[in-house]
Image (cartoon, rainbow, N blue to C red; front, top):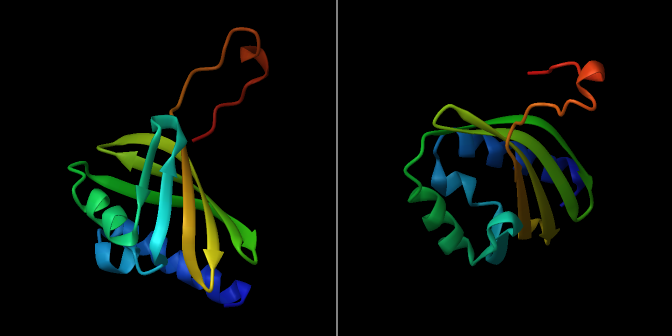
Length: 126
C-alpha cells in the first residue's frame, strides 16, 4: 500500500471506532497484530482478541482525531478519546506490514492544571 491508501485506511479505522463499528474498526489489523498499553502494563495479541477486548468495554466513548502523520510503515495518530464524557489525550503509534497493522502502541494523558511555576505563561486550550 502507498501512503495515500494507508491514510484512507486510518481514516476508515478511526471513523469506525467512533461509530462503534467493531468489525470495520479492526479490518486494519493483521491476524497476529499486537496492541500494547505501556501505562497499564498490558499487551493484547491477535486481531480477534483486540476486537473482543474493545467490544467488551462498557464505557461510552468518542474519538476526535486531531492529526495523523506518517509514511511508509510507521504512522501516528493524535486524538482525544472521551470515555463517558471525560477526555483522555491519546497517541496511537501504528506499525504496518503489507498494508495491515502489526503493532500498535497507545499512550494516554489525562488533563491536568498547570503548575504554579509556569502558570503565568500558560494559555488554556480546548
